[in-house]
Image (cartoon, rainbow, N blue to C red; front, top):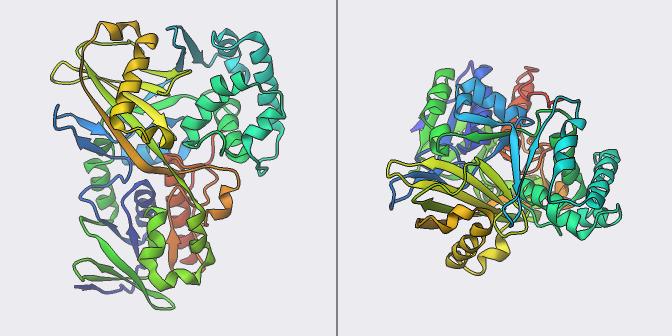
Length: 455
């Protein structure tokens, strides 16, 4: 079946139902565009998804997703749809060492960045010498130019940071935030993380944790909202090829040989698929060829079900350990207490296999939480998202394309595009809004979809 071009509204086909595609589709439809959203899977959400654990029947996330108050576009996206209430604000952060001691990081009633002064000074895992070094390092980092980039480890070594400062402060924050090994982290995005989270606003650091599985968060309510705005959603439809019919006409060929005609195409797929979908057309824009310079990194989640609670804390940063964060996911219908340990940038760890990862994490936990020794592990499961995000290494922006391409009518959306952010859900939503802005601008509509940063 051919879907013919309309005479009143331009047709945009958005390929990919992850956050980038959802944001682009919603913004375009809300401003009068005819939008067809195509997703090969039977559900939306992309990498932000869940699956059924056959042993328990629980719907579990492929990886714990965390937002922050500084993620203004993700927050706007959720609130506009009406799913914001599924994300719980957490005003406190807990840092724990293997001796079981915990430090609380919570903003005080002082202007940023002084709101963290008391928590920082009280941090038990840092010596006074290290606190002085870190304070100086943070101040100097704030003074660097926003577009400056270099290996961040070299920058730290040249700015009074000891190895222990790196291991107990810089690395825990950056590896989790950027999903990048410290030896590859670049100054540009390291600076962005610390400036946006710690310096700009007293609430910017506050976590936002989903209280429902990700496939529930980005599920039926999102689909209903998009359809009400006029988006036609095609789930379970795989795109075989995207073809350029003329200077201003595109065709999308599905696996079942159906052809959909369009004025604009938004490729909101993983960057590894862009060139394959375009075929020879990809050579018309050198930026698409540059995508091969991006490198990905895995995130590993260790899912644990105990017969009793092992901590009353909602989440904990784990220092001096393989596990980096522990999240409490509550009690299920079988009276099992469910926790998730997250390990970012886990490529080296995964070489030992999932069984070893599970044993390693379980061997570490008793030193952090004494109640683990009293609890029985009912079940454990290791899940790895092998290409979770691109690495925010130094110089990475050289390989990140804009949302607008040199091919008329072709746009890109995804956290890998130039969003000003590293690989995050915020970056994905921003990319969708930016792609929508460019399409609408070409239609003669100057609108602002992107939400302002937190100040």
